[in-house]
Length: 511
Image (cartoon, rainbow, N blue to C red; front, side, top):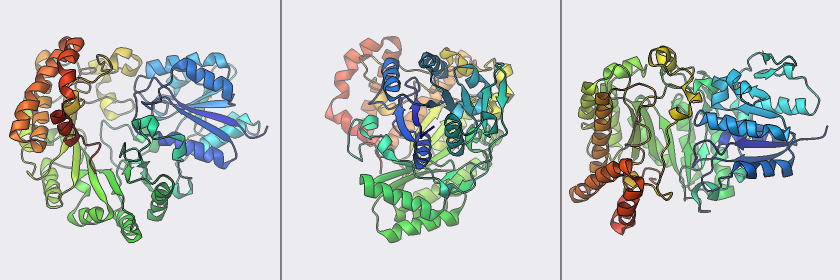
């Protein structure tokens, strides 16, 4: 058979994403490198949402030899329904992505003909050879499928890709920025231009599921290879910002310094963001990062309580966090974001009060951005394995009621959400842990107090005294009657006074 037509798809049932799915971009690049024709349909792009019938029409017209679908855990029951709705097209369906890696047998039983386990770049090339008639399925490592008797067959695990520099760069032509931001302006979504400079994470946090795909072995692209990718993006798309999505970019500081030097010597003027652990930074690194144009740092701090940090295996203590926040204070101006996870089974209101006490110690010159969430017990994590029997959430992801959703009146976010984001709505709902009313009230209290601390870093006293009470009223009314909240608060949200504040408290546009 000649070269193939391959459709790569993210179902429209998944949560909307303002960033491109680079896993599909990498798969498309390796397939095109072998001469195959590839089309990507990202159903998660918020400005290009496509209903199931439209996607079926695209598939019928394109006539792919197989369909590759990436799945996350979010709304996976609806995604399975979508996949089974494609079965009538009689085109082989290959499933991959974070959730099939964690639950391959489940994915196979819910519409997949083949499930990829592990990294997909080498696997999908060999699958293409299978569909060309050149290779038997049982010779391809890192997959599962059903044999003629309907029995699941698991082939040997595929080794991780050792040299990431051999991979082609993902091509952003498959991801028009207007589909994600509503505009062709390259700065309409500063975190759109994403880059992975490494894969894997050597740490073992009890709640984290990233090891399901990339393992715990840290593999690094060379500084030159990463720099070349970003330079290509500048030349092709005139980008002005780039967002590194590595789990831990600073495991090899010599490599990071080499990248910064390449960037500084090049004269490129680009603003960049990185995600890292708080205990990975130091004064020299922050100075070098700022010179290179890295102006945003996001930290997975998770907790400011020593007991919780120990039990979730973060491998640092609160004093370590404060020490490194002093480095950040000395390095200002730089934009900082971090998260709070509260509601672990062992925590009480005293934990939350202690955390608030520690948050108040953050140096006053740091205008931080922060979010609050309750812990999600992802499959194949230590958190899930320890508690799923006790709390009765085995296979919770197959229950549609366990997937947090937010509905708007007239497709308009409520007033408070312009300032609080998901602080007090989506991610503090009790979906897994059977909180008592008192416990849920404690978590709600914490989330509002932290939101207040956040606002005080960005607003004057006058602005705070206006915005905070209005957010509380908006939130209360929204929970009671969404239409009524819209009626009273939608006109208010459009005032220039509030628009200016919305811009100030949004981390997404901070560079």
